[in-house]
Length: 116
Image 1 (cartoon, rainbow, N blue to C red):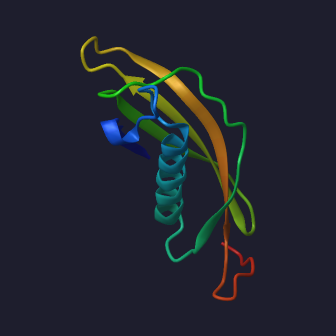
Image 2 (image 1 turned 90 degrees about the horizontal axis):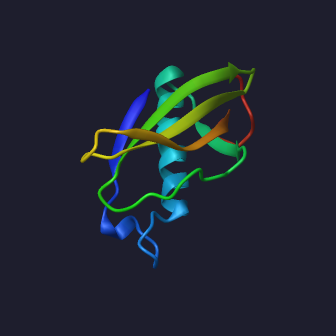
Image 3 (image 1 turned 120 degrees about the vertical axis):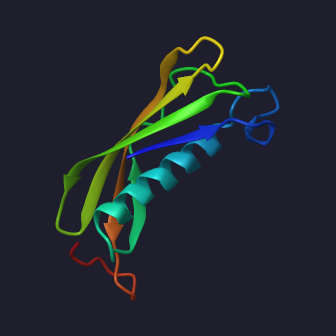
């Protein structure tokens, strides 16, 4: 699944760069959307995100492309890889800025794990 996000002034930290927490929020949201599309009726919650490491800074006006792909499905959980690319609309170039894997578990109405 692919999504895009325009980096606006409200997404920046005090130094004029994308605040990392915003990127993590978007990764979690877009991967969750992929999971609920792949497994309708499941109630997924995030249980982990591996290796949070930013490869380069991002400035206002950058268009981010989020590429989310399913890696593994277990009995009660599913794992996705999320790759984030920065697209410079002026030059047309694209560069990887962040990659992680994120895991969701399916819960029942009592908050207990249940099969997917």
